[in-house]
Image 1 (cartoon, rainbow, N blue to C red):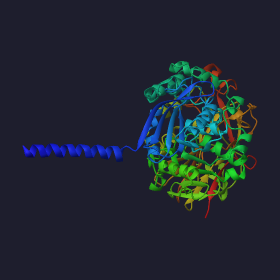
Image 2 (cartoon, helix red, strand yellow):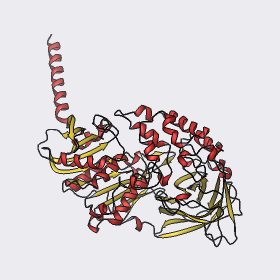
Image 3 (cartoon, rainbow, N blue to C red):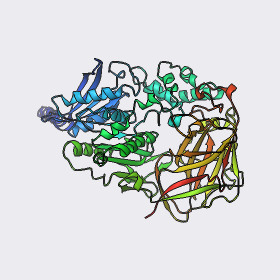
Image 4 (tube, one colour):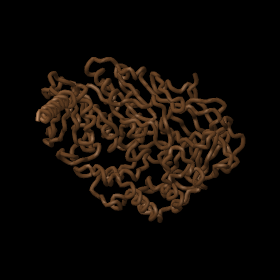
Length: 588
């Protein structure tokens, strides 16, 4: 009996001890669910608050304004609350438990202002408010900053969308993906399962592609006509509709808060993130510029918030694996709690060199490349085959020549073949290069005599003539290794009617030669190995994932098979027309 009693007493003691451990050491945050925050028009947004447990002193508040439902950010909220911050996850207007209607990019600036000022007045806040988030939530930070709420202390925009520039129509070419995203954010629910059904979306895009249906019917094809899809299509250029969503020159001139921008070499919204960054660095005051830091790592889009050591067949060094939560915490302590500057930020720009597998630091993006190297297109007039011998030469071609691309919009064989290629090592895949045919030209450099760092944005200048008023071209750059791998580095695309400006179209005249500059390649940094070569592919944009250009020069969204024109595109390269790629080289 005594043994039983002793056992019971021991059990009770263990239970009490366990409860004390859990209550005192395990749970380090408090939760306040369903905070209703009034906006200036009376609509109430819903917030989930994470507060440090037994909060005794006022603390800064970090806001994450998201259209992706607040529950998905629980781990972030817990982390920051456990580290001395109040973290507020707010459902965007019309999403989750917030009132109103979701209208992408239109509503966030004023709502962001109202949120900052609301939280600054709460009894747990020390009147310092910051923001957190990437992609759409990265855009929300810039949108809020341009409204200048008095208590906004800092922003940390990651992978920020820049509406009208990189999404939903990079370089004025709409992406099919936009209807999937609009469905993801339709109504108030999460819609994660629908959005994650890749086979559904792939089949719908392929259906439009195979039947040559007009792009403007895509919302009807997928079964969701409730979104702003048609509104977006009505603005194919970077016009006042898109400009109204983004900071103006005078906004950048007035901004004067610490900013930490984060993007990646393979971030789908790198163009947006760097457009914000470059505009700021162009127009802001010297004092403000000195408070803006930039990180560019070997990350894809989600990796800008949660880095991965490998994806698509590429693998990076352990140094690439930044603890983003820790970095954010140190940044917020630096900007709002008089803490030291994060030790990682050794200079204004930190960029990761793939191949060398290390971080390097410079004062500005312009200080990265020490030299420019031009490689000129050169061939005997036949560059359509990967084995043709067409070159990227250090010397200007000494004879008049041109390579030809034939683009028949009704030929969908290349697009479907590429669409069906589900290669897990897609960042090193050579599948496409050997199947391009007459819809592309391919050039190779000589083997590199020494390992060479290429870091920055490359530029390609092409001299082009065609027998159609408009068409689309894409350019991709690869490192071709001695192991037979083609490592994807960067790419760009251009609808040729916008070769002079994204704000106004200028159709081409048949037979006339035009200089077309491709200068929106994604930033990358790679130590090209000794004996590797570069591969440059110029091809038509005849793929299911993009709005198809049928080459008529009309409204691309409304074009169908009946509008189709076969494009005969000439790439000129000789002493007069010096088509070339310009590489940003870093030498010691």
